[in-house]
Length: 158
Image (cartoon, rainbow, N blue to C red):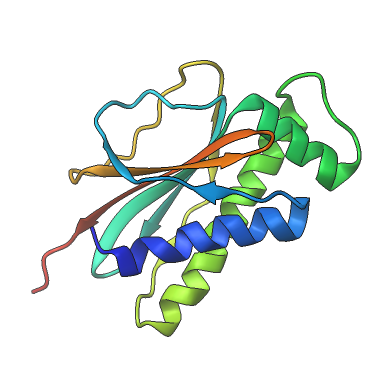
């Protein structure tokens, strides 16, 4: 998987959370993810497609981090992951993908974005619907961890 394609998503996530929620994330070491079980409690998943590629991105938050972001953005901290928190995760997923899309467009990569789907609950699954491997990048913060998963298939040109 091309680092030039993945880095815009990482920098976009860090930028969105720092700007919108005064939350600093520190990226960890990327790894291949073999199973579909999430590493957090709430995930936003968004599909992307272009003539050259199709794939998906997920942004997953541990509950403590999701609730802290909610509190910083709206001034209230819910007791648990509720509909407002899942809406916020979907919106963050949209902003991260939109920010990355803008960076990638400058490099000649164009793609369309689907509407994000949000899944929550302990051990929920994330199905990327790609044949290629899934790369997972962990992030740490003072309030908990976040994870980005990226999976893309390159389509035949012809």
